[in-house]
Amino acid sequence: MNLAAAKKPAQNIGSVADWGKTLGLTRQAAFSRVRKHGIPYVAKAKIDFTVANAICEASMNPKEQDRVALSRNGGTAAIERPVSELGKLQMERERIRIKREQAELEELEGKLVQIDEVRAYESAMFAQVRSAMLVIGSELRDDLAALTNPAQIEALINGRVNQALLKLAAWKP
Image (tube, rainbow, N blue to C red):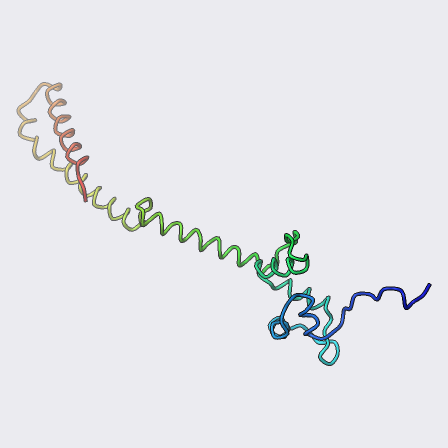
């Protein structure tokens, strides 16, 4: 077998610029990634492409991971791969931001109300109910003292309670 005719294995060690070319990056972007991710040099101005790729992929956000996968696949759809921890955190932060914005929108549309507003409304409503119910006894005491028929007493009390409840039903804070 002719060794010269055999294909050379893929180059795993080379310059930062060469590594950047394999990823479709400019020279400046490749050097920036080396500094940003702390990729170690194996020789003077040489890096191990396999190590550099592993370090970069472990710390990339999902958008960067998709862009790199697309460049490696010749522009075709990205292949499935696990998402880095940083990517998971960024996706969770994005989900939280979206939920917060949806809640703000629903509040502006009147679908949601702040809990403090609800508590203030409850307090005012219960104060109104309490005051409306407590005056019934003082308003009816003279009329009740004159009555001896339990059915008339019940009808008088029920009538006055119903008036108070109707008044409360129409109450607006």
